[in-house]
Structures are given as C-alpha cells and as structure tokens.
Image (cartoon, rainbow, N blue to C red; front, side):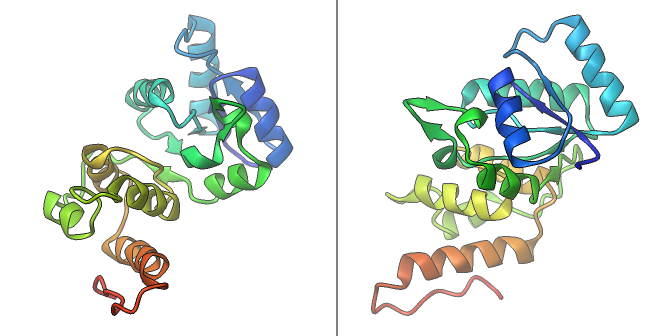
Length: 193
C-alpha cells in the first residue's frame, strides 16, 4: 500500500489508480475544489502526505499548480500524455495500470527554491526547443525523468523545480539520443556522461 494519499481529478481516475496500486485516493472533481474536498486533502497532507496525479492536459496542470501552491510539500507524479490518451479522451482514467505504476515510481517533490541547474541553453543544446521534433523529444525526456510533458518553458521550470540532477538529465538525453540515432550512421552524441 502506498503511504501517501493520491489526489486525482475524478472518480474514474480513482478507479484507474486502484486497478494499478493499493492506495487511498481523493478526487478534486475537476477545478471545483469544494471546501470539504480541500479540507480532506489538507487532512491527508498533514497526516500521511499527498501525491498529486492530475491529467496530462491544461486543466490538469492548472489543478496541479493550485494544489502545489496550497500544499508545497506535496509530491508529484506524471503520466505521459501518450499513455493517458484513449477513446478521444486524455486523462488518468485512460492510463494503463503499468503507466500509473511507472508514474508513481518516479514521484518528485516540487522545490520552491529552484536549483538553477539548467538554463535555456541546456534546452536548446539538447534539441528540446527550436527543432522540428522538439515536442516529441521533451515528451520522451519528460517520461524518462518523471516530470511529464510540458512546452519548452514549462520543461525548463520542471527541470529546476522538481529536483532533476545533471546526471539524470544527461542519462535521459543519452537514452533519447540512442533512440533517435540508432537507425542512423551518424555517431551518437554524448551529453556529458
């Protein structure tokens, strides 16, 4: 059983999480966040800790941001968008049990004091912005790092606020490079490992 209470958006998300792991869940019911729901989340936060697992879409990110500000020591899990997409719907309820377990295995703590380890130059050099496949590269790297998909600016924010180390970043880029370059005769780049 997972010690922390997992905060998701809806009842179907709870069902999906329970198919994946033994855990207690609280649903926000979208962005409504009624006072009784906030009170339940606050109780869980104080007694057991919480893991925020919202949908990988703009509404889910708004809910995550709100909860992160209110509960600064909450932990965060991200299911990649492509693993939460089915039946013309994106959400945790669409994710497989394996995808949910994988996300919960890469839980991160949001750090309000950014590390400033990463710069815009790192994003550009790694091909995470400014190249045709940058969005795909960010999605794959975000999955590997457990920080989910974001646009380039959001990705840089997550790198510096979710405790990603330079070594983890380099490892993610090397695995991305191996995947990208394996069918090519061009020498595989090395990002500092």
